[in-house]
Length: 239
Image (cartoon, rainbow, N blue to C red):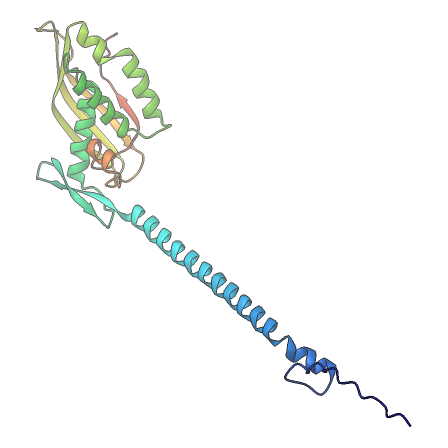
């Protein structure tokens, strides 16, 4: 009787650890894949929360800068007569004093009426001052534009005219209404031109004068006076 041969081929060792069922074995065998997936998910969560944190920080910075931009104001020093000079910046906006407003209206009147001879730089500065003190899209802007087209200081200077404003008096009639009175001296080629020297007018402001936050505007209009309308009896020289 022949003996039954026993197979001597090596059997594959089961993968460790061995569970109680094929399903348990499969779950334990794939534990490495599961851990990798968990690490991947954790890294995405960290990236997500880091992005949220950066967005929050950026929002806080933007809010801070916006608030700073709105509250920062140019500070000016004024003496008893209302003359003003740049000092620096402040973190709080403030209303201009009545003396500063009256001084600024005097500057506006001189900028509009003076004919400073052939000094183009001064003529240009006067024009900038008048524009920075005039409310945009207002009756004052239209009136100033029409006046400067008819009474152009550059053209009049080339014809030999020179006009100087003096003895300006500014009085407040109401919170946003001021009365101006002044005298003018007009010359043509160095000779005085007879004219009515006494002049009066009324200026209406567009709002409470507030020191501007823009230093460029502050160079021309440090009191933050914006004229929305005016009524003047001044003469016009046809340029």
